[in-house]
Image (tube, rainbow, N blue to C red; front, side, top):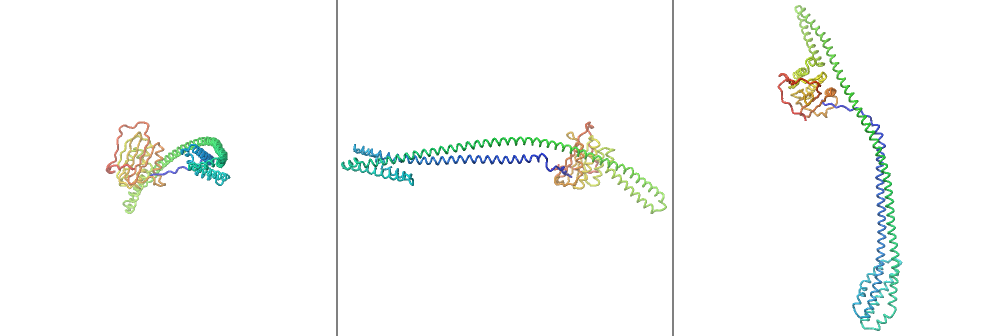
Length: 494
């Protein structure tokens, strides 16, 4: 009952879409190049930045070590100088509080010497540092010995040590070693500072260069992107024009198919009417003449030959059946009631005959709505096709046919309480209602088929009303009682 229409074949690929292929490939390729270039530029900037950082960090670490070595050398000289000054103050005054710097040197000097030896280990300054450490230790021991002798009261002994040049020579050696180390560290610190400056300069130049390169790449990308956008706008315009052309082609083809369907339906009905007239005139005349001849022969041979009379009676009955068959075929081809009596009487006759053949209950609610000849014929054929499908497939018990006016439309409802079906699951090859759909749509109307498993089926047709107003308060015609008592309407299908 539900029909599917295959769409017309389309070209394999539209020319405009084939024209878009190079642009799509170029856009994808440019997007990949842009992403790759951006990733490469980011990696290069990060590499330059990291190289500059680690270079500066290494130079700063070396400079810090140089500063620590210089500070240790200066601290060595400071401790020995303060200790020597404290010894002399103690010798002059005899007061123990002057010995505080000497005690401080005794505590700190071993650590300072140890750090110096560790810093210059395995270097060309290792021998000088070892000699300075030895002389510093000897100088501290000499200062401690003088203080001890002074405390013991041996004036000649400590005076002899003080007046000798041993302590001065040791102190001078330590000063010279510290001066050389300080000069060396200052030069190294200057070198490390230059290294830091170079690392920062290289990083700055690298970042600036990569930034300029990135800006250049961005400019190129923006230019290419603008070109791609322009091409996309152009192709979008071409695509819109192609779409409009195809829409116009679809509208034109739809109008042609609608007109063709209307023409085919008209030709079909004309052929049916012509065939019905031929059957009525020619075949009807032949059958009637044959029946009259048979009746005349029966009167002539009724008494003379009883056996022949029986044969002629049987032939007369066959002619009556042929005449009835001819009349039924003519009514199927072109219902005379529709042309002579109108739509409502024709539908009453059609449904009454259907109820007698099928044994189903039919309920009619037919309003006298003005229709044109093509509309009356389309509605009659729709009811005829729908009832045929109900008898073949629906397994229904009750059918309701309704004709009326609603929302400015002429509406025809044909509802049954049968088993229903899934319209989407209906295969091809069912052309009855599909042809009716084209017939209704060719008249400016619509046809809907609503059904579901176990919920029955509803066929809803809508046609535009005639421009001239119809009769007011049109009566509603109900089918005669022999069609069966009116049963409650089944629930609308889901």
